[in-house]
Image (tube, rainbow, N blue to C red; front, side, top):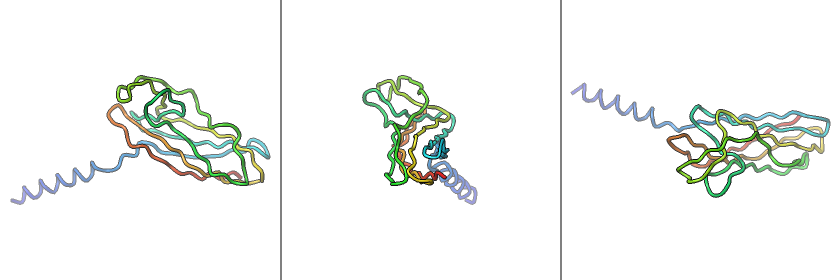
Length: 148
């Protein structure tokens, strides 16, 4: 009888450990002043092996593309659009289309025009990540990046 309870206990422990929330992407942020009145904000996604994140540009219908929103502030103005390196492209059966994506890591950049000496760039990144086996629901991650 004790062995049955031990087996059930071990089984429950296994299911509890394997039902943890997947977090295959981590976000990091930095800013660099490029002059007294300009700066560049860097937003980096680091992905676990086997996972990919979708690019900002997507042809036709498909997965949720990565997009950025910035909270307006008197201390800065955005200069241009968020830029990123050229993405990889492949056909994905799940979406029945070619998709643009990044593996391992990608750094997005936004140029800023400063209207004062210091600023804090706040906003959010919306994204979707997938592996060859599954896709996670679209997510949003808020950020706050000080520029000194």
